[in-house]
Length: 460
Image 1 (cartoon, helix red, strand yellow):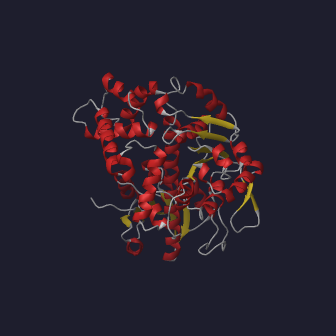
Image 2 (image 1 turned 135 degrees about the vertical axis):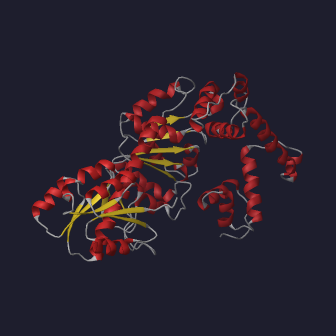
Image 3 (image 1 turned 60 degrees about the horizontal axis):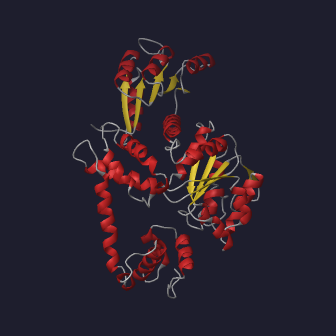
């Protein structure tokens, strides 16, 4: 069936008017229908989803104002533009009271009518977006509760509840994949903020030259390409929560500006002179040792203490294996809610015997893959773990000359050698290497400095 992005219904007994308007609006983005009586229009609304209705005041079988409520009963999101050749203040008030979105008098220019229709469609889109956002917020508030609070995370329950009861900054630490984002959302929604914005930003994913404008916004003309003013994440999160993931990757020169927001609640847009105020709750997360970063002058000590008013550390999954069974059952239900998958006690035992370097995220990945590959209702994720372990071990033999005698390398050494090999393949082009590695260029530069890698003379 042919799909249309927009549906416009014209209810008017003037066929010349219907033909002219229908011809004007009939494009690839519009579906236009005409009805010449009120009853025809209502029947069409009962059978079809209508975005905007152009409704005439005087119809052969009724007054337009008398069927507004019946049209809205078919679809309360329909926008009615009331049209009359006999305009009056009383008619306008009555139409708006009965649910009309706008009021236009005949005769009118087609461009004037197009402006009214476009505004009505824009309202429909904004309401639809708002409904989607509210639905997502409700879903998040229900599903972003931290599993395992009765197991290995029982000691964290009180910290999360205390953090939700106030607006102080929170620093969440832990390895990658332990659930730091889930904790941040849990704090936000436990605090009764389901209708307030929750905005997250990954500091490591933003290029260093863009992170300031993303966080704080910019004024028109602040730099080449800034053709208009743009709000930053701090303004968009006003009244809610801003979650800064990988806070340890924030460039050192931007950290004083973040500290200023935490201390005073004010900032300036890039290229701006006027101070902007914000009332936003900051939650940050990191998987690196910030105290070590402070000793290396890569993170400000004053910002660290300001951020860690409330500090929550999430233990890796290998230290709370009693949660694996509940997490596995939760993922089975969440990934395939319409299919009743089960996992045996023997499989759970195998899962508990694995160290889970990727933590909860890796567990979810393994469960999802096992669901896809399963031929019956019982999943066997342990087989995928065995295959993964074998695949991870085999390349070590030929990874480099040094690994032939020492096949078991530390994670840091593996990362160092892999980054060096990618740099070599990219002929020391750092921008290209960062794309291959899937990291920001600023992150790659820090890794090069950390491991003292040989990158030749290129600095691209």
